Structure formats: C-alpha cells, structure tokens
Amino acid sequence: MKRVILTPILLFAILVINGCGSRCNDETLLQNGHEFPEFSAVASDGKKYTEKDISKGPAVAGFLVSWCVTCGIELVSLQEIREEFSAKKLPVIAFTYEDPSKFEKLLDSLEVEIPIIQADSTMFSALEIDAIPTRLLLIDGRERMRIVGAPSFDESAFRSAIRKELGLPEPESDENSPQA
Image 1 (spheres, rainbow, N blue to C red):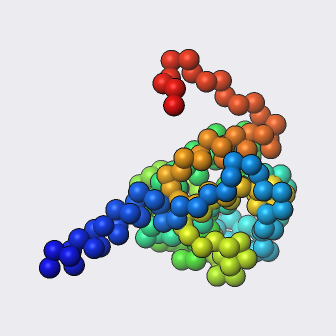
Image 2: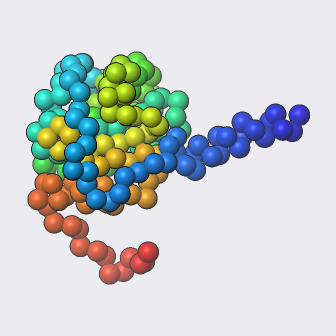
C-alpha cells in the first residue's frame, strides 16, 4: 500500500524539481533554428495574432499547459520578461494545445497578462516541442535559443540574449549582492 501512495508523490516531486522537461540549448545562440510555422488565432486577450507578429526582430514564445505545476512559474517568468522589455515592445506570447480559458484563474491569481493561443499539434511537432514548459527566443521568426523546464538556471543567459538582440546593455551588477 505504501508503494502505491509513494509512487505518485515521488513522480510529482521529480516533475516539480526538474520542470516537466529539463533539456536546454547551450548559451550560444542557434544559427539555423526552426522557423516558426504560420498561424492565425485569437488569443485569450481577444486580439488576433499571426506569425507576422513574432517574425520581425526578437520575440518570445512559451509553450505550456494548465495542469503543469511548473508552467505557473514559467508564466511569471514570461510576465517578467514582458515587463522588463516593454519599452522595446518585445512580443511575448504563450501557446497551448488546450482551450486558453483553462488558464483564466491561474493568470488572475498570478497577476499575469500574457496572451495565450490555442495551437494544434502540428505547431508543436514543427518546432519539436516535446516537453513543457518550453520557451523559445525567436529572431525574425526563427528559433535562436530554447529553455525547457522551469525554473531554469539559464534565465540570465536567455535575458542576456534578448538584450543583445535589442541592442541593450547588460544591467550593472549590484556590488552588495552575493556572488554565485
């Protein structure tokens, strides 16, 4: 009986610690990543989006589902990225294979305002999204960097790559902060 109870608990703990996935590309940007497929959809914010909205300059695309615990952490990270680069109007959009209305309570509770678009399995396949959450940095509609799983230790490298593409300097380090 103990084994039956402990197995789901152990599996849940592994998913929380590792995210729903744990693969990440090098800190170097991909030279020829996947091209983002064509799409046209109305997002959870009521606006219509197409691939053209994320095909000029840098953009961030997140792939998540409502039942994934670490996807909530990823939504917060996406919101932070959106706010940090708001002056540059960096597009940040999330994609799911579910009805985006499944995220309403979660978005409200986290105070996150990321548009969520329902995508079909062909988009996930074309981009080789095989674990969630997955976050892509797109440059002119092509994948340049990928983070799989949340929380991610590659967060600073991801934001650094965005700053580089936007021509922004790295933030000055705080001399009083502890060194890693």
